[in-house]
Image (cartoon, rainbow, N blue to C red):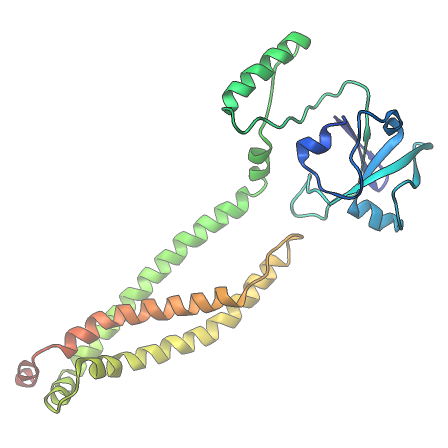
Length: 278
């Protein structure tokens, strides 16, 4: 397989089985066929190329490459082969009868990759003994394109965990301080018949309101920041409302659980001891 640039298009020379190897999806027409000698002058285009040329009913239409006519036999869905941060390039594939310098092979998933590599190495050594056998896995090469995003994701996760831990320590300290300051009030309310649940609700309400106010401020800011960051990518996901809702529920739950340890402890304290200490 060899590749070259043709103006605003990428022209890629392939074999008949290229489509099966990359598992491209035919939108119109058909794939290359070994049974049809006319496919030596046939081409397959991606959707971006068809859209750029504004061709209606492209199958059977003739285009020229280097003043040589080619017949469009198929149209495939756009395949991301280059940068994941740029639009899919307009691409033309055609059959090349010569010897390529790059081979794209799909390994049998039912057999160990190492076993398949050894067999391939033997074949290459037989037909081209003077050249070293070098290979890469497509998924590994594609993964390298997202190293910076993975690094940012890991660092963000570590800092988020650290921020949650520090926030929980702060809430725990504030809850302990409030419980200590309201010891007499809690004792009086308990003597008057207040339940543990009502005392827990009383002490947790103030903190829950503060957390709710923080979420009202943080959610729009976070959404705008994420939207701005995602807008720099050509291919991106949308920010779902349920992900924001789950984040808010998680933040509120962590805050309530942190506060509850001190609230329930204060509510279950013997009121006689609480009043005596005062």
